[in-house]
Length: 130
Image (cartoon, rainbow, N blue to C red; front, side, top):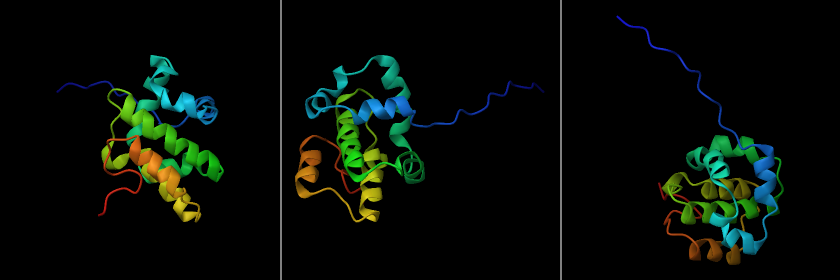
């Protein structure tokens, strides 16, 4: 019998500096998201892309509605334009949208139309029907 080495699992979180970077992007920068950051940034963000609702509630609960709407746009284009970021029905866009909906602040139709126009993910922005 052999004993393997144990490595503790790393906790995943959205680091405050990365969050601030995402929230300060202009609309033009969001549209060019794949060219805004280096590979180290994308490596930090990638594990976040398939987290569940409880994770996102903890990470963004203190943000205001406009900031959450901004993040929906950012994560839409991260998923669509950055290699290996596709997340289907686990997209942060869905969870952030559900948080906004619980606040009775789901984005206006213009934002929903923008999301649908800028993604190949059929689940955005509302999630799975089931």
